[in-house]
Amino acid sequence: MVNKITVVGAGNVGATTAQRLAEKELARTVVMVDVMEGIPQGKALDQWQSAPIEGFDTRVIGTNGYEETRDSEIIVITAGIARKPGMSRDDLLNTNAGIVKQVSQHIKATSPNAILIVVSNPLDVMSYVAMKVTGFPRERVLGMAGVLDTARYRAFIAEALDVSVRDIQAMVLGGHGDTMVPLISYTSVSGIPITQLIPQAKLDAIVERTRSGGAEIVKHLKTGSAYYAPSSAAVQMCEAIVLDQNRILPCAAWLEGEYGMSGLFLGVPCKLGRRGLESIIEVELTRGERDALAKSADAVREPMGAVKL
Ligand code: APR
Image 1 (cartoon, rainbow, N blue to C red):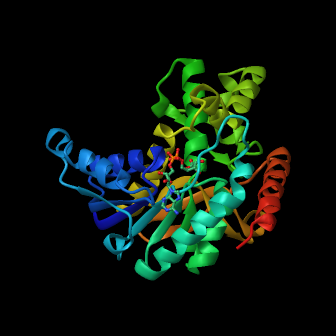
Image 2: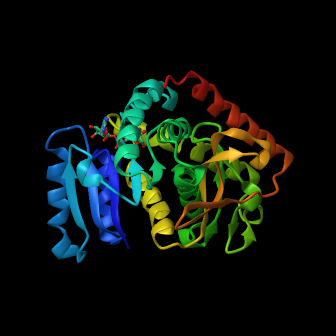
Image 3: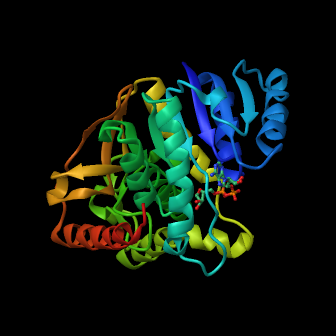
């Protein structure tokens, strides 16, 4: 357990993240910050009152300022506006960039040693904004996307085969958007290559559904976007860091030559431990996967160039 984890944004993703962090007792205190008066305070109080029933001792507090967040070890950034139907993640770009910039300035002033996990979309670009504004090293700025995309992919495969989700090993790389790259060559069911179990056409359909996994949920919800699986994914990354697990998880990380690319955040296999990003793992890719990853990188570079800081 660490002393303090802050969640910025007490909306759907933020509040669910805070609750999951508390239930897992990953910190002594979980602080929720939001610009909406009363919302973080009310939700935090409500969550804290579930503690005697759920049996956790993590204190959850809510605030509109950053004093209470001072010296957080980990900060999950979920502040922003959520996608509406028909809105692409990139439409969110400049509104959310302004929000993440302001949040990052506060973080730099109050928690200069924190590890940041960025969830606000468009994720890869918001991670860049957070790193640029805080000046934190790449080891302490990670984006949450790959764990979520991989979870969706694993869930669809488990459903198709009617087997336990626990037995599906997979990795989805690239940007968090339509160009994400599910690695079929590294997908297995308890070590059995997925291509032996699912015909190619069905696999292609699963890959396609994974790519539009977020949009499928937005279409159902109409007034918001996904938050149960996104919060689970962010908390899995926190857990790997807090417990120094050295887990290999697909995360958006700042590339410095890995996969032949530099100067952008992109989803790659990362080793997560107590220092945050311990290392990036380079795996062999097929020509098709390499091309798809390059295309995904282009889709991240474009909005990155358009962001006003
Ligand atoms: N500081 C703190 N909180 C802020 C700020 C800010 N400057 N600006 C907005 N917020 C808060 C809002 O008040 C709101 O409570 O961020 C919260 C966002 O919550 P929701 O609208 O419920 O959105 P949510 O579904 O949680 O998604 C948040 O995560 O997955 C991504 O695409 C999603 O970018 C979106 C983010």
